Image (cartoon, rainbow, N blue to C red; front, side, top):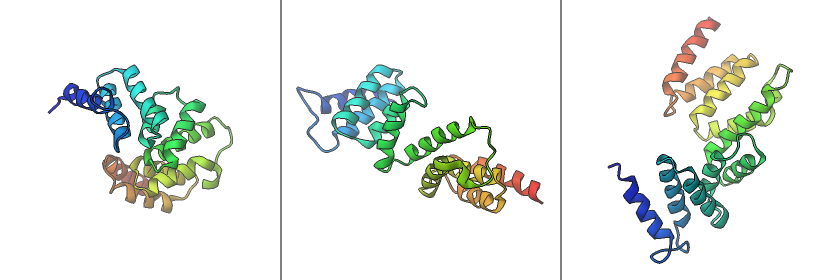
Length: 182
C-alpha cells in the first residue's frame, strides 16, 4: 500500500524504548527492514545506523550484507561485511564476493586459460550459482565461455533460464552463443 512511513514507525516502536527494545526474536530483522525502508526513502545515514545496530549488536547476517552495500566499493570493510554475511549463508553475498574477486582479476594482463585461473571469483560465483542465484549463473556461463568451455557455458545458461530476473538475458545469450558455435 506504499505506507512506508507507517511501517517505519512500527519497526521503530518495536526496537526502541519506551515501547520496544532489542531483546526479542526478530529484532535484527526488524532493524534490517527499518534500514531497507530508510534506504528507499533516501535516508542513507538512518539506514546505515539501523544496519549497524542489527549487524554489530545483534550479529544479523542480512544486516552485514546491507551494511556492506553502504561501504566504499572494494574496501576491506566491505569485504569483511560480505564475508560475515556469506559465512551465514547469504547467497547474494557470495555473488558480491565473486564480483570483488573478478574485479581484482581483470586488472591482470594474463589471459585466463582455465576456470582455475579465475581463482576465488569462480569459487564464489559457483557457490551462489549452485544456490540458485541467477546473476552468478550468467557469470559462470561467461567465465566458461571465456576459456573455451562452451558446453559448460551453455549448461549454466540453461540453468539461468529457470532463474527469476535473468531468464530473458540467459535465453538471448544462449541463442547467440549457440549460433556462434554452429
